[in-house]
Length: 446
Image 1: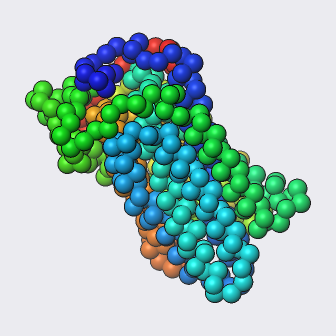
Image 2: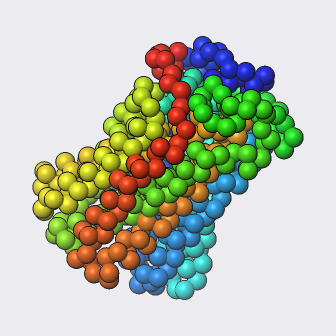
Image 3: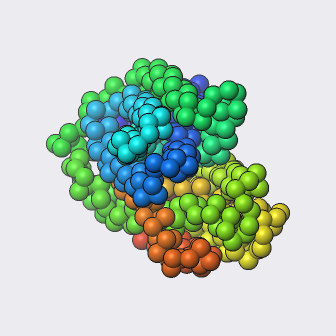
């Protein structure tokens, strides 16, 4: 662990109390649950729009594209501003509030009839993309700064599990609330209001007195602490010289390689995930029914178990090896699924295996970022790897599948196989990452 004042290495025990750490994990986990729930709620909005005859497929496609591109585009700016101001808790709340506002904009779009609603559709997608750019770099940074290195992976894993839980249950919760007497359109506004309430609670729970974000803002002339304690063989650590607090100073070989790996993994993973429902409907004859819902839920639920498991592994083993195993495991899970037929128990088990590995990116990638980037620039480093890398790949994933299936749903299985192989091949890039020091075992929040 590196002390933010003197830039010196301290022991893991130099952390806040167990209660303090648990509170941070609890509040950031709530934020992750709401953030990922609303993000994966966006395709449900697309589904509702597609059912209205005034909304063309082109507009729905444009909505999803604007959403993903805005999320990737704003991520780096969020990181730079956060590292300059140090108000990570407040900025997480702003992001969650932005997602809430986007649902109200979508509510207006769903309530209108005629071409005028298209403007609100795209505006809602833009605001949702803006709001979604905040949580992942900021939430990870809060845990990277306040949880010991020996427990950081586990904290990120537990936190990530709540994100997976949000992805799993939010679409179902939407229909549950709608069944209570609200129309589907009104339910969108209900979730918008709940998101704003959650944002207020998160702002209080992560107020500066709790997150201890009172350190002076870093500027271009400030000296950053050296990272020799966590990086072996990195040129910056070997030189023993301070590095300027610039974006260029963060982009070392390990960060660039991790960005590339994150980009390719996300392109492959999200490309497959976004088309799995259509594949099950058209090729496995699941139909738009409860069977399809169970299959998709099982896939997402794999991440609820996978994220804490891989968070534990990165605290005990070489993180590069764990990342490679995860990439290969995800590819293997998809190939097992493609070898099954129908939508029975075998297919469901394979989808759960695929989800177990696929949705473990959060603790894996951002644990490595914490080792490669000085702590004063943790949010910017997270934004580079998660925003430009992971989210950038996510924006292109569905398009990649569309190209690979050659205009026919019958080729979706082939497209999945190609992308699964690409995901597995990213394991070959892990030797480009600098080896990180192992942390000794300790209680998670001790």
